[in-house]
Length: 242
Image (cartoon, rainbow, N blue to C red; front, top):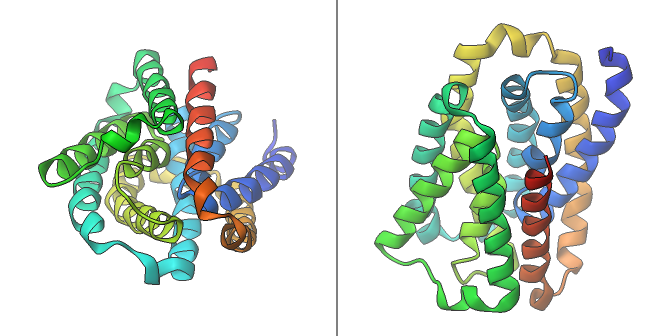
C-alpha cells in the first residue's frame, strides 16, 4: 500500500499510542511498530518508530519531569539503558518468533501477578533492581518493544502513578539515546525513505501525548496499577496471537 494510503491509519494509531503512553509509561512502540510493519520490514519498523517514540517520550517527560524517582532511575534505569543498547545491537541478528513468544508469556505473567496480588511480595531492591533493569532492557531491545516489559518490571517498585509514569519516561529517554545512533548507522537510508509516515506518526503522537496528560490526572491512584497491568496483559496477548 502506498504511503499516502497508510497515513490515516498511522495517524489514528499514533494518537491512541501517545495517549496510552502518557497514562501508563508505555505504548508508542507497542502499537506503532506492528502498524508500521504492515508496510515495512519488522526491523525497519522498529527503527522508524524510534523517532516518534523519542518525540512523544520527550514531550511526556517535560510534562511530568518533577515526579521522577531518582533512586529507581539511577539503578534500574541505567541498567535498562545498557541492556536496551545491547539488545538493539543484537536486534538485527537475533529476532525470532520463539523470542516474541517468550516475551508475550512473560508480559502475561507480569499482568497476572499484579492483578492477583502476587507482585506485592516481589519487590526489586539493591542488586535485584540492576538485574531487573538489565534483563528487561536486553529482552525489550531484542524484540524491539521495550516499554511494556519495562513497565512490568517497574511494577516491582512502590511508586505512585505520577512517579511511575515520570520514571518510566525518563528511562525511556535514556534507552532512546542509547539505541537511536545504532539504528541511524545500521538503517539510516531505509528510515529516510519512510519520512512521510514518520512525520505523520510524530504529529499523532504529539496530539495523543497532550491529551493523555489530562486523562492521567483524573485516574484514581487505587486503580492506576490494575489499569497498567491490564494493558500489559493485552500487549502480551497480542504478541502471542501474532
